[in-house]
Image (cartoon, rainbow, N blue to C red; front, side):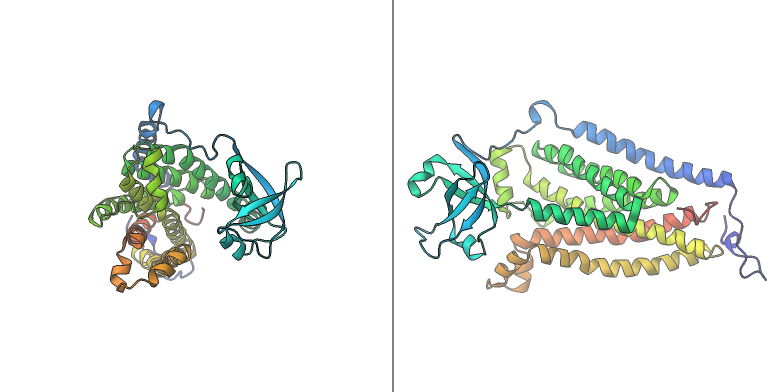
Length: 396
């Protein structure tokens, strides 16, 4: 279809150009399905091939030893003094039985505000009785406040976005379940991290986009743009993780992994993290661009493809500008204690950014941003081609 076919007839500024025949719309949907089917099949085949089974499945790590157990309690009394050998004893009431016991607590937790009424997780270790008390403070119990926040978030999402918000929450739950069931065991078993990351990301996007936004040409267009962005992210991430020597050894948690999962590839874990880190933002920009093209076409059915692409890209450029600092500030907020510590080191700014503690996050941000920036014009171009041949451009 030519650009001329999309313009309103002369002398009828408000007339809408007739949409293409239903056969053309079906043809477009068939072409989208044909483009998406190989990706879906590759995702399913990859998941089946990489799924850990048999001896490759890594077991669990016990968190308590013989003769020890976790119990919960409520703090009822904090000593004014009495810190001995760097440990203070607080009085707490056990949930199980209601007995009052003394709990050994490091002084930094007391200084952080531990006080009466706080719920705590305690480990009972019989051998520790010789050091003052068999009850050792482990952590705060945060179930109630975090659960309340989660409920408030879910209620607000459903109240504002209604059924679409509920569908998005369901899609998020399914995606997280997939990561727990496939991605984590596959990485622990030493499977190819690049393949695991791409299969995970593709599977997550299939679930999240279609569950949250429904089956439509608009959603399929966004998914195609997302897949392109993921491919770019995976390719650049593979190169960057090697060129920047991202070993995964700068994280204390990562250093513990080989002891319990000897097949795990720490470099691969970093690479998989590069792919998954920008997944949410990538999904955001592609669905936004796809929706923008549909809405622009609905508002001006007579616009040519060139005009439609130009207007949609103006929206895309604003989105790119905002996500540049969105991703950066998300990391700054999450890693603020580390940044404070690094800021006190006698290093230059460049040395600080390229140090092992921060380099992974810098590369992760840059790789994800490159994939995001490239996905916007590609998604916009595909959306323009699809919507210009659709017989109902205003319909989601």
